[in-house]
Image 1 (cartoon, rainbow, N blue to C red):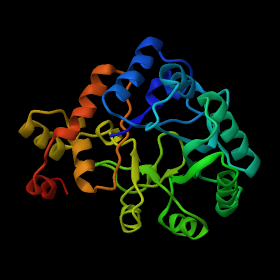
Image 2 (image 1 turned 180 degrees about the vertical axis):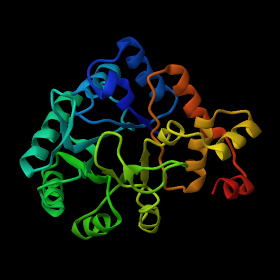
Image 3 (image 1 turned 120 degrees about the vertical axis):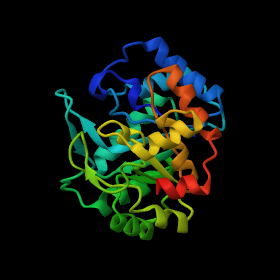
Length: 273
């Protein structure tokens, strides 16, 4: 289980957390409990999660993978905008290196934004160039369609894919923050065939807009929370899935991590779909 830092920011994924000390303790507790994959982005905040990570965890454990994303930025009105020219990407990487206090970032996802004026292959080529320069160790893709993933794999080594994925939301949908969001179900088979970890984000989002009666029934069966069953379903779905649930609560962090102990039967998985 990994940990996604997006929820450590203020409202609308902007500004400082309501309780900065709690945010720092969450990061420290996650690593203390064995989490060695942390997902962030310099447009969370802006720069809030990166600075929290550095303050809480630097100098980093040798086995800790800090994964960041580029391809987007934020305006003062809190809107999300595309930021994916080769120079944009270079500036983002340099900013992430600075705020995270790193000389090389282990993994960087190029997030594909809707309505881009920059061709996908131009942006991805810039990512591979930054990799050659040693600023990035591994290149991943986020919010990627099946077609663009296949295209990207012909251009270089794609280490990971980060798409929205949960029991109640498996395919493309309109993103609550604007634009189209590509689902994990559309690329999972490609990831499995090529041994590419699929990192689902918003994996618990499906429990917000509507109730999931099947998840609720399994949660009652095992006396666990619906969020835990959502995570357990992902972990049972494929060995190539790495959930990164985020939270701004130490109690919820502990709850999320306990989802790895839930053993769903084949009958449970067949029922959940």
